[in-house]
Length: 400
Image (tube, rainbow, N blue to C red; front, side, top):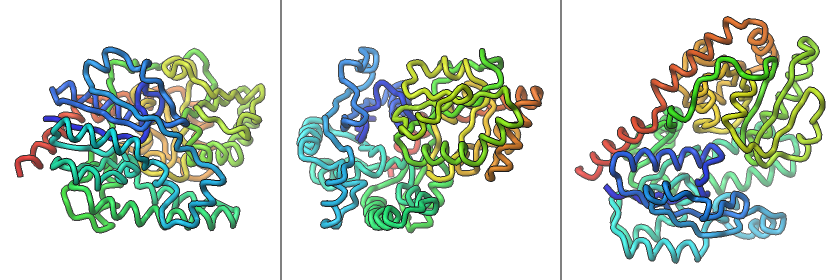
């Protein structure tokens, strides 16, 4: 089988959730002798030099990137008002990538072309013109639903009006993309059901994001106890919203009751407003050089998400490392968990506070959560198993 992955973000080296999702699937497919080509937009915001892609990766995957500055700007956002396109999606379509894609499609014949996220759907008309491959849309999230949740939290009326306009355009673009592709791969069952409810009636499959479990050793005893950490890409609005909510509604009460506790907020793209929160009790880390050391060093993981959709890859990594995790129902979406066995669910500030204090005090409960987290990862998130199931699904499409 020969598969071309198209991505709007360079996934090597893998330092964030979507990069991990893209790269781990590519590795998993290659382990089953699938011929993988990966063509990506290498954005200014997430730029990763091609020379940093290891020889090992290049031996497994035919990799190529095309540079583009897709960053948002005030002028770009304003000028977009005079078009009918969503500013969220239109930034990822440009002629240089189209040219490279056409050359790739003219020189290679693919069985499957997999779009990594809906923003690559802008190129479906090019794919249909130059290829007869099955077009698969892998939805890391349902993008317009993320922004609908963000709008519920937004207080600034002008910002809310602009986001609402853009999201209406995004929804139209996304629903059209669903109909133009041949199949959809969702990362969670919740997203699958939501897409089916939106009227998609072609074949659709849930395929969880897998991890290489050998790379994640369970850590029952971190080097720093009485620590709580959030680790997420802070250039994604729902993660910023989550940290701000925790700081405003949970942290003060916890730190008053547990004066020896320390909070660590880690993740790239850290907003200045959160950097300014740094103190003797709040440690802010923007550049995490070694994520394994971070998981080894700190104790209880929190994922207090209020918006977003899809699967939180950092949470999956937390499970693989055997961390005790407190999250919200939204944060845990897509995880096949048992409440209070694999993770603790807390959807209100008071519940989050009480759960965190209980977990700090109750070492037996924490140990049970840690062990169950690793067991869940082993049962559900092995990347080779995930890739094999997807290959079987694609094979059924090719034979039908």
